[in-house]
Amino acid sequence: MNIVIGLIIIAFGSFCQSSSYVPIKKVREWSWESFWLVQGMFAWIVFPLLGALLAVPQGSSLSEILGADSSAALKAMGFGALWGVGGLTFGLSMRYLGVALGQSLSLGLCAAVGTLLPALVSHEDLFHGGGLILLLGVCLTIAGIAVIGYAGALRSRQMSEEDRRKAIKDFALTKGLLIAVLAGVMSACFSLGLEAGKPLQVSGMKPLFATLPATLMVTLGGFVTNAAYCLWKNFRNRTFSDYADTKALGNNLLFCALAGLLWYSQFFGLGVGKSFFEEGSVVMKFSWCILMALNVIFSNVWGIVLKEWKGSGKKTASVLVCGLLLLVFSLIFPNLF
Image (tube, rainbow, N blue to C red; front, side, top):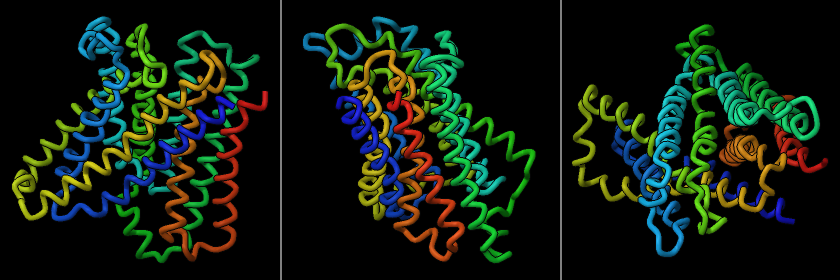
């Protein structure tokens, strides 16, 4: 029963993350870099800080927890900075390869590396027992993402030549593949940052929120990377004036905050959901892959609701449903043994 509760909590957080693009569309009259920086302040600093404070034992402070093992905190932040690079290059992978191939390759690698690398570092045997189940679960997740990517490719074939050129106007296979690999591996550093931050789980913490101080350090590292890039874009594009636009400021702050809250919910849900799993169990080690699979599922469900797949044809719809079902099965698979 605990596993079911944990999965439901992670699924709720994932659904919130997949919904974060709805308030994003309400942001107006700001350049991308201005919006990304402001929503990042909420998603990567404000709400992670509030989440981390929930873990602080009575009579202690967050600074004491982070200072008790500053090495672990800095390692988590360092991995967060690398994760930030992954987030920035993720968009480029879709620019050069298209959404179907770029997203599938990046997310597949993110799920695989973020799940398997910590297992390898801890000397997990991936060809026997629980390690083999973990490996097969990751393979199922990658297969599901690949099938959905194929559905996306089928959908793009049904587009007009003009629309296809607009969608992938800068197609470059070699460059795109390299960037997609970089995006996938760097994005997986969030999972590695959480592993590096495990020593921050000190005695006396509330078990539900014990992982959240490490999450804060990872998102803080990601904010540093993204803030540096956004401020550079502000300077280059002369868009610092966005922040002084009083007409749009109130509206944009509200929707950036909402988008940030929804985005952070995935990692809040991951941390709380994992507290219901048995330490060292396969489902605990598979939790990162579970989150990635759920993110893909809910993103595509939103795509269906918003009619992004409208007119794709029966074959494309069937392939999409098969991919989604495969991902759902990958969530159940580790619990069958």
